[in-house]
Length: 273
View 1 (cartoon, rainbow, N blue to C red):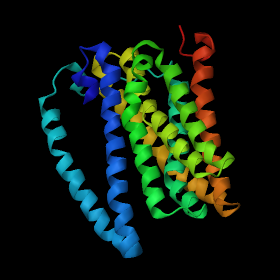
View 2 (cartoon, helix red, strand yellow; view 1 turned 45 degrees about the vertical axis):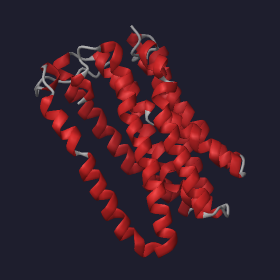
View 3 (cartoon, helix red, strand yellow; view 1 turned 30 degrees about the vertical axis):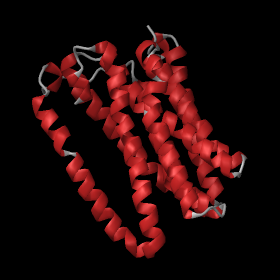
View 4 (tube, rainbow, N blue to C red; view 1 turned 120 degrees about the horizontal axis):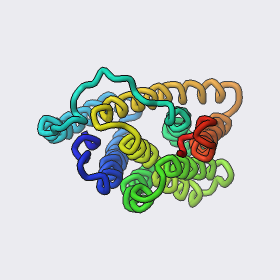
């Protein structure tokens, strides 16, 4: 929806996408403030009630976006049977897939790590809220980069930021390290999708923009599904730290793939022309 709503305002597109994803930061913080206290009181049985309330809030929150979606018009909102031009986007697509598999490992297992470190649920909630705050602030921190830098480099830099955030609690077990880790991770997490949106906006004709976004999102979703299963398999054969280290390794790979693809000559498979 953002892609087609701002198709005639390219200078605002990257920021609008970043603001859109910053909403996830608000959702992360709200869910942490609600779910953790409920589970602290009710135990695992409280998940049933927590999911119902979160689902209700999500349904209410979808009403305005649905209304806005009906108002969107233009060539980017129409279906197209044309083939997507992916020849110059393969490294970004692969990096985006690896990023999805890597970042979700941190999101899945970080609370378990905090429990293993002996932190209370109150501190766990605070760290979760800090992560959400980092996500919400990220569009403003990355505003100029999203506007002026090549999107492939922004994708690489955002993946590098999440890598630093994910590896920090493995190098230092203190409470301060966990807090800083969550904030840094949040700053980079949803800038990757924002940079991909900018990349597609610059690389595809208007009539293929929505189709391109859908394709990249499906690839991202597959990566999200694979990441926790792969990390869980690694963790079962090692430790929780090993599982998180596997996620960090994926984030490092997601940093390098789009960077190498951008730096390579176009004839060698890069996107730089």
